[in-house]
Image 1 (spheres, rainbow, N blue to C red):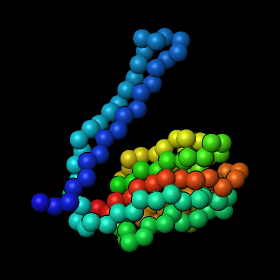
Image 2 (image 1 turned 30 degrees about the horizontal axis):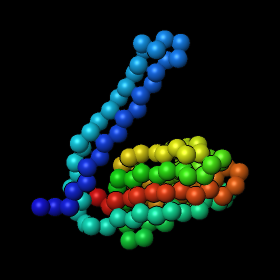
Image 3 (image 1 turned 120 degrees about the horizontal axis):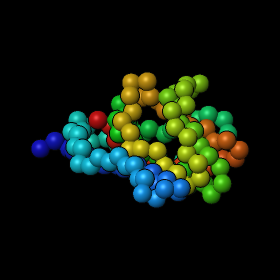
Length: 125
Protein backbone atom coordinates (compact mmCIF):
# COMPACT_ATOMS: atom_id res chain seq x y z
CA UNK A 1 0.00 0.00 0.00
CA UNK A 2 1.36 3.43 -0.95
CA UNK A 3 1.54 6.31 1.46
CA UNK A 4 -1.69 8.23 1.16
CA UNK A 5 -3.14 11.57 2.19
CA UNK A 6 -6.77 12.54 2.55
CA UNK A 7 -8.01 16.05 1.82
CA UNK A 8 -11.28 17.77 2.67
CA UNK A 9 -12.54 21.34 2.89
CA UNK A 10 -15.58 23.57 2.84
CA UNK A 11 -16.63 27.18 2.33
CA UNK A 12 -19.98 28.58 3.41
CA UNK A 13 -21.67 31.96 2.94
CA UNK A 14 -24.77 33.15 4.80
CA UNK A 15 -26.49 36.39 3.72
CA UNK A 16 -27.05 38.62 6.77
CA UNK A 17 -29.97 40.35 5.02
CA UNK A 18 -31.64 37.06 4.15
CA UNK A 19 -30.56 34.24 6.50
CA UNK A 20 -32.35 31.71 4.29
CA UNK A 21 -29.75 32.35 1.60
CA UNK A 22 -26.90 29.98 2.33
CA UNK A 23 -24.34 28.97 -0.25
CA UNK A 24 -21.87 26.20 0.42
CA UNK A 25 -19.33 24.16 -1.45
CA UNK A 26 -17.58 21.25 0.20
CA UNK A 27 -15.49 18.25 -0.67
CA UNK A 28 -14.35 15.37 1.48
CA UNK A 29 -12.48 12.16 1.16
CA UNK A 30 -10.22 13.11 -1.74
CA UNK A 31 -7.35 10.65 -1.51
CA UNK A 32 -3.99 10.95 -3.17
CA UNK A 33 -1.05 8.59 -3.24
CA UNK A 34 2.25 9.97 -2.05
CA UNK A 35 5.25 8.65 -3.95
CA UNK A 36 7.72 9.57 -1.21
CA UNK A 37 7.25 9.98 2.51
CA UNK A 38 8.56 13.54 2.48
CA UNK A 39 6.74 16.40 4.13
CA UNK A 40 7.49 19.49 6.13
CA UNK A 41 5.47 20.96 8.95
CA UNK A 42 6.69 24.18 10.39
CA UNK A 43 6.22 27.52 12.04
CA UNK A 44 8.01 30.33 10.24
CA UNK A 45 8.40 34.02 10.93
CA UNK A 46 7.46 35.88 7.75
CA UNK A 47 8.98 39.34 7.37
CA UNK A 48 8.05 42.37 5.33
CA UNK A 49 10.51 41.41 2.58
CA UNK A 50 9.51 38.34 0.58
CA UNK A 51 11.15 35.16 1.78
CA UNK A 52 11.19 31.52 0.76
CA UNK A 53 8.93 29.17 2.66
CA UNK A 54 11.25 26.54 4.14
CA UNK A 55 10.66 23.28 2.25
CA UNK A 56 13.27 21.05 3.87
CA UNK A 57 13.59 17.87 1.79
CA UNK A 58 10.33 18.49 -0.14
CA UNK A 59 11.75 18.90 -3.63
CA UNK A 60 8.34 18.55 -5.34
CA UNK A 61 5.76 20.24 -3.10
CA UNK A 62 2.24 18.92 -3.60
CA UNK A 63 -0.59 19.45 -1.13
CA UNK A 64 -0.19 22.40 1.23
CA UNK A 65 -2.04 24.25 3.95
CA UNK A 66 -1.00 27.55 5.54
CA UNK A 67 -2.27 29.51 8.55
CA UNK A 68 -1.44 33.04 9.64
CA UNK A 69 -1.30 33.05 13.44
CA UNK A 70 -0.50 36.76 13.81
CA UNK A 71 -3.14 38.67 15.83
CA UNK A 72 -3.05 41.77 13.60
CA UNK A 73 -1.30 41.66 10.23
CA UNK A 74 -1.77 39.74 6.99
CA UNK A 75 0.50 37.46 4.96
CA UNK A 76 0.51 36.94 1.20
CA UNK A 77 1.72 33.74 -0.46
CA UNK A 78 3.49 34.01 -3.83
CA UNK A 79 4.31 31.50 -6.54
CA UNK A 80 8.03 32.25 -6.12
CA UNK A 81 10.49 35.08 -5.69
CA UNK A 82 8.96 38.18 -7.32
CA UNK A 83 6.10 35.88 -8.32
CA UNK A 84 2.36 36.29 -8.47
CA UNK A 85 0.44 36.54 -5.21
CA UNK A 86 -2.04 33.65 -5.10
CA UNK A 87 -3.24 33.87 -1.50
CA UNK A 88 -3.85 36.46 1.18
CA UNK A 89 -4.41 35.45 4.80
CA UNK A 90 -5.68 38.03 7.22
CA UNK A 91 -4.83 37.54 10.90
CA UNK A 92 -5.97 34.10 12.04
CA UNK A 93 -6.95 32.98 8.53
CA UNK A 94 -5.72 30.02 6.55
CA UNK A 95 -5.20 29.02 2.95
CA UNK A 96 -5.83 25.51 1.73
CA UNK A 97 -5.73 22.70 1.49
CA UNK A 98 -4.40 23.41 -1.97
CA UNK A 99 -2.29 21.42 -4.42
CA UNK A 100 0.65 23.56 -5.47
CA UNK A 101 1.03 23.65 -9.23
CA UNK A 102 4.16 23.67 -11.37
CA UNK A 103 4.44 27.46 -11.03
CA UNK A 104 4.55 27.35 -7.22
CA UNK A 105 7.21 24.77 -6.48
CA UNK A 106 9.31 27.28 -4.51
CA UNK A 107 6.65 29.40 -2.76
CA UNK A 108 7.46 32.65 -1.03
CA UNK A 109 5.60 34.66 1.60
CA UNK A 110 5.55 38.30 2.66
CA UNK A 111 3.95 40.10 5.61
CA UNK A 112 2.32 43.49 5.10
CA UNK A 113 3.31 45.69 8.07
CA UNK A 114 5.31 43.67 10.59
CA UNK A 115 6.68 40.15 10.84
CA UNK A 116 4.00 37.46 11.26
CA UNK A 117 4.15 33.85 12.37
CA UNK A 118 2.78 31.26 9.95
CA UNK A 119 2.08 27.55 10.48
CA UNK A 120 2.21 25.29 7.44
CA UNK A 121 2.21 21.70 6.27
CA UNK A 122 3.48 20.76 2.80
CA UNK A 123 3.42 17.18 1.53
CA UNK A 124 5.43 15.99 -1.45
CA UNK A 125 3.25 14.07 -3.92
